Figure 1 (tube, rainbow, N blue to C red):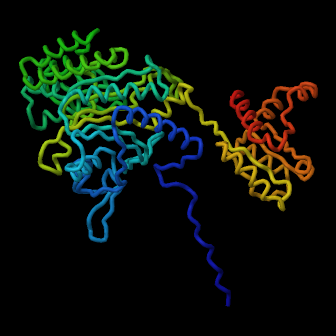
Figure 2 (spheres, rainbow, N blue to C red; figure 1 turned 90 degrees about the vertical axis):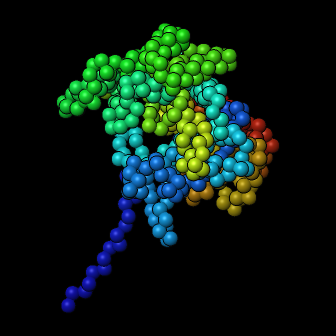
Figure 3 (cartoon, helix red, strand yellow; figure 1 turned 180 degrees about the horizontal axis):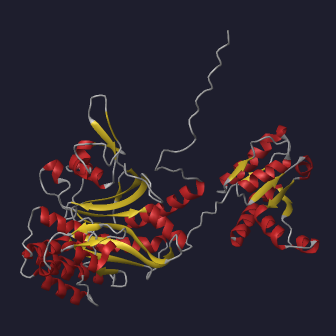
Length: 496
């Protein structure tokens, strides 16, 4: 009788879930450095940090779900043991609404907060599109003054310049949902399916342009794939107020506002929106933020079903090459606006709020394109181990370096093969290797190997004479360890 063969254990695949990825040292360091710069600007503007739970009840997220009847559509959701639905946060704004509603009696009014962290969306992933990504938000809750909107725009401008996007490489565009409501009022579209269809069409303006919107508002159009998309069914004359609204930007703010007044006719809400835009423009000009940084632009139509007043978007205007080698502008990295109905879901009372969200990954990608940051890691100084019985000496060295603020580590692998220690240091992108054998210990010296210089010399220097003139390894007094390592690191940074 044949013996049963033991089944091989089924091993899990060493892969992240679809739509997720891992981030290693340099990328994490870059992100943290950029977030620190952003937080510095937000803090300077008087905003306080808020770190809310990554998990919210589906009830709290509510209106942000694509399909409220299926709580797991669009978000990662599950039922708790008491059968209550919970979900990973979809953005950082819905948690803010819940926090403010819960703690409004203890919080100052207005409440100014910023938040940074990952959010999760249960959507189909694609190239560069992940199900977990970082957002960086700043919001003011509890004031209807458009000074709060102007302040957010100014802060966004300062933030972009702080992280390394120079003036001239970005523009912040400002519009107002109330102006569009005025246009729709003039058209007689106050509610109903046709109004919603018009809004959805307007939201496509940045993708299909004036001609595409005109076709979609009227008879329909062929898309890029050749498929025919039915239009809303408006006549050419009926569609004209929308086109006038979207294309009303003039050479200066006064001209833009005049064009908008013509577009909204006698609509009270439309005129209110235009007056708010005029006030925002005046406040920004008073703070020194001219049209080279922030501009009134009615073509900004983001999130029309969400925002209730001013909306704004930060666009990077420098050119990059796409995957096919074609030139295109980098595009949007941040956006936001006024949303006065969000907290009302919890309290029953309207609480005005405005805020902005920065796409952290896109902004990091922009900084790499501009050469403001690189993914080249900066490793620690490696103290090699020549005698495993003298580990205490090496630990004393590394402690001395760390106490001086220098990143350092002792080699903790098998010290038998010294070449492997240097290979390890190279793999760690270490600038310096510290070497102390028995002879060096007796003489009170250590050897410093300048790994960054050595790499460059091996590629550039051809003769022994040139090598001797620029030695990559020096002998120093043990007492000078910190000072000499610091010099080597500074030289390595100068070579980058």
